[in-house]
Amino acid sequence: MKRRFLIGLLLVALTAFYGCKNDDDGYSLGKFWVTTATIEKGAISPYIIVTDNGDRLFPSASDVPWFKTRNGQRVWINYTILGDAEGNIDHFVKVNDLAEILTKGILDLTPANADSIGHDPIDIRSYWFTDDFLTIRFVYGGGGTVHFINLVQDVDNPVNENGLPILEFRHNRNNDPYNYRMRGTVSFNLNALKSEDASSVEFVLKARNFQGEPDFEKVLKFEYGE
Image 1 (spheres, rainbow, N blue to C red):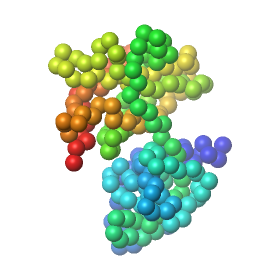
Image 2: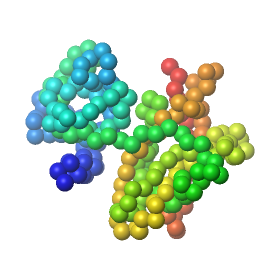
Image 3: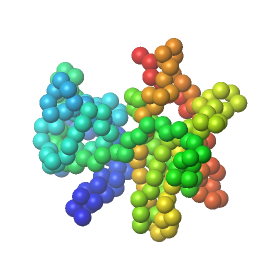
Image 4: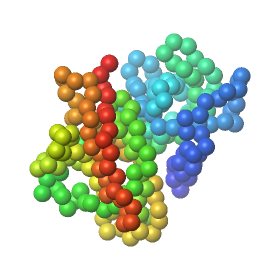
């Protein structure tokens, strides 16, 4: 229960603190920020947190020392700024909580896996690119069982009439009744869309929305070149 409470605190606080900066002359231990980020492990121990707005944070202290980190891991982070740093580190921080973000690649949609992929409604609320990741925040109905979330490309119809790849954000609710309106976050690695002779690619993102609401369909541009 304690873990669920902390993750809930992360999501509730997002509305007020996502992407905020401290404009004061100093930093207060009573303030905290919540955002999405990627773990960077390697040259600096134990790790660096790279937020999606580009800040590089060093965990000088942590309330979750048991949280297992790995290079390239996508996370929600709740943190308090302890002070400014130098070089390629922006701030020293205290990590109040970490929660892993579901991270997947692009899955081929075939007749064999169509049923398990599902086509239940899901509401895309926001999305953004960070390095090789497309992160999506979404709303769905459920509350009793595990749902399946995927980004798929139909092997029989991979592109539209203009030659743009079509990616579908798919949801299988596993027959879970709509008891609650729930929120989730997922990151998809888009490496499969990259081409050696280009620095960006446009693609169509689709999703089936709830009855009475227009389905989601937008052309997005994934930029990956220097």
